[in-house]
Length: 195
Image 1: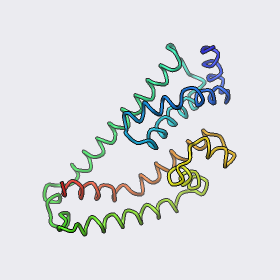
Image 2: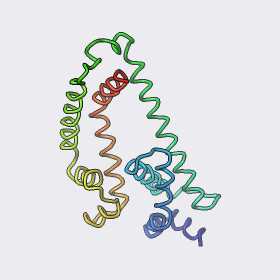
Image 3: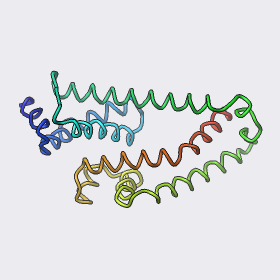
Image 4: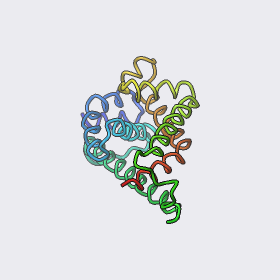
């Protein structure tokens, strides 16, 4: 049975990919959440893994059980993500000299007015960045992040495939990351200084 599913995956059969969601998605999300401690991020990473399978389906070469293959892929994706986040933080801090980290304009007063200002500015920038997203991408992202809808619900509501939902979420996160990078670095510096 499992070999049949793998063969159907290789042929790009959408029912086989639906089978992955119905039989493995919940477990994979649970495993990812253990690594990243964030439900939304865990779902996104699992979605990335399944979407990647779709992209490379013709060259799939699975020698172990399908579940073992998926679990291993999700673990690797989570570890890669955490490593890239750690490298980003290290680069962000290494780009700032010691003087910049200790200058008064980064150190908050007792009431943390800089923190409040940064929070308001970041929130405003996030809303601006979301408004700039392509329309369908923005609709999918808002339904996922702010309405807390699952990928399957969004796909059904918008009459698109789950893979298309995954694509839009991945694209939205990439675009938002590009636009908000400098604000996140400033916020990291602020948080570092108030500890």
